[in-house]
Amino acid sequence: MIPGAFSYHRPATVADAVKLLADLGDDARPLAGGHSLVPMMKLRLATPAHLVDLHAVAGLKGIKRDGNKVTIGAMTTQHELLASDEIGESLPILHETALLIADPQVRYRGTIGGNVANGDPGNDMPALMMTLAATYQLIGPNGAREVAASEFYQGAYFTALEPGEILTSVMVPVPAAGHGYAYEKLKRKVGDYATAAAAVVLTMSGGKVATCAIGLTNLHETPLLAADAAKAVIGTSLDAASLKKAAQAAEAIMSPAADARGPVEYRKHVGGIMVTRALQRAAGRAK
Ligand SMILES: Cc1cc2nc3c(=O)[nH]c(=O)nc-3n(C[C@H](O)[C@H](O)[C@H](O)COP(=O)(O)OP(=O)(O)OC[C@H]3O[C@@H](n4cnc5c(N)ncnc54)[C@H](O)[C@@H]3O)c2cc1C
Image (tube, rainbow, N blue to C red; front, side, top):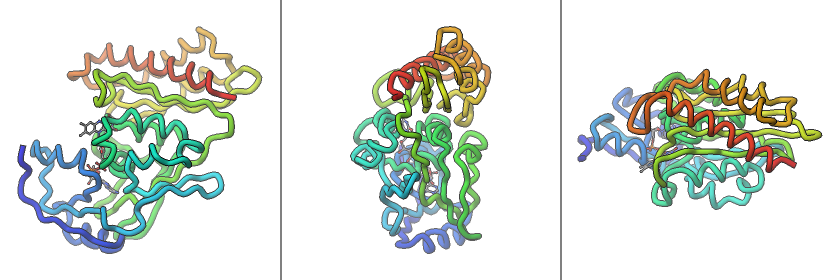
């Protein structure tokens, strides 16, 4: 449970962090809250020779609303998301999801940037960011670029981040006024990763679903957008038949690992239940 030896670097600017990562190459990893990376190092599943700590890098923290977009600095902690009035008002599903991550000790240190950049299928923020149509801002040796959350995840722990790139912020469009939302997460105990989880953001008009997006956590090697499941409820009043169709369409794209959280069939089954519950709760909140 003791990590291998490593050198510690503490740059003060994004440019310095990028230069260090580029110069040190594959042996270097950015360090944010350390609540995914350090446990991996203790288990020797990650053995970086250099850690580039992002805590002193200027400009990577904060939450700012600009028109219809909320920009969240990568080093903003999960605790800071929970304490933010802006997040509570503009993106209540982000508040709800952050509260379901781990426990207060992890949330005081864990950052939104680390959560979405990590690439662990068990992280809760990635599927939510896909549901919200968020964009990630990246800076690397070749300059700055933006990648949609829906295009960022390529496999377990494998993302669109290029060597030397860091994620600097997450940009989230504010959902329509009166939208309904819910993040439903089944976990074995408080503080655990999801056995299965579903995010829903929808709007209702005349008692029927007008728009809908559904994201799935820990039900595949990457987070998923359940587009067919969302289509199955659009134009319906979320009657039993359309809810069943949506759950079946979502289950059809799930391929969770069989692990200590349960066998594949069980996890798909409870995944469908999370989708149903999230749809019902979101519809109940829509105005
Ligand atoms: C007991 C426990 C329970 C947990 N339960 C949950 C849970 O239920 N749900 C959940 O979502 N998470 C859970 N976590 C993980 C926690 O939320 C982590 O904090 C989060 O996954 C990673 O964020 P971090 O800031 O700690 O990143 P780190 O651990 O510092 O980094 C994670 C990875 O991302 C890379 N990285 C970090 N920041 C950047 C950046 N800005 N740009 C590029 N790469 C970057 C690092 O190099 C590393 O590879 C749990 C952790 C613990 C210890």
